[in-house]
Length: 412
Image (tube, rainbow, N blue to C red):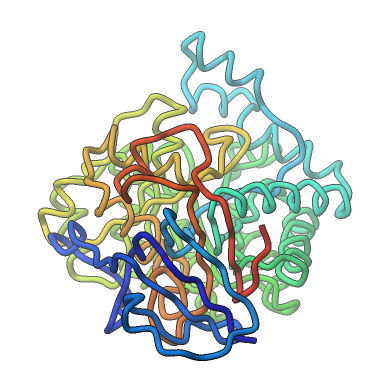
């Protein structure tokens, strides 16, 4: 089936020669085509150009995008969107001054979500998660990475991963799954943290591998969570089963998480509120994507990652939503773009690169998603009438997406 999108006011994030990521000063540039067309053949982008270069031909479907812009869909490379119940009471605790660590130490935070998830059925988790997926689709997301981590037992972690597998089978989104067995330490293992690490290594990783449930492995390597040595043990175990790392690191302190992630060929290191010269040097000598989670920093009122310093050093930067019930209860990637510009002082071009091609790299899909390029999957959205692409991060809080195309099909 051939589809023509015509009279596009501006086609954004065009690439003649596709890249896997955009680094340093190059993040400040994007290519666009005004008064453009785009042709989709099946689920792939076939061609694009200016309207005056469009040759006469027959199409199965035509979409008139007069006054509207076309962007590649967002790639959200870090979410925890499978959960049972919200945590607004902890939100009040945060308002009253309790820290993330203090809430976790008294059994809240991740442990709160784990208790609820262990009690929920697989069908309940699936139905709730599918609603959340439909919500993020409406805001322009076309690919999402989903982590386990609210199970904290082998049985519950596998339940989460099986839900992700069902979502992959039934959602039009491109979905990657991550085993995050080491998201927190269960209360019964307090004082015996090494024994819980053994459970992750000897039970969770082999079972996830045996059932083919996880694309990646993740560890929360940070102050108050898992140590560098414990993280290394789990990453080594995951590597034996072909699970590449994606690390939670340096949200609370310079934890060594970046360095251990780089050592074990992590695809991304995420959070990064604390980044100094040693972390930047480690990233520069790696293929690891620094990934910032603006929603969590905003919601927890944390110090901001030094994004400008990283880009000035020549690094790429990705941004993702961290959609979860405790520290970032939103999967709206349009809002993440606004945070990127307002809080991190990124330009709109840098924010677009951070939430499309670079976040696609951070979940291993930038070869087929994250930009408008011939041969890439036709995951894109058409905006409502807007004046410029800079309007996307400028106009925060409202949905600028009018039409969503995933896998070459209009679904909204």
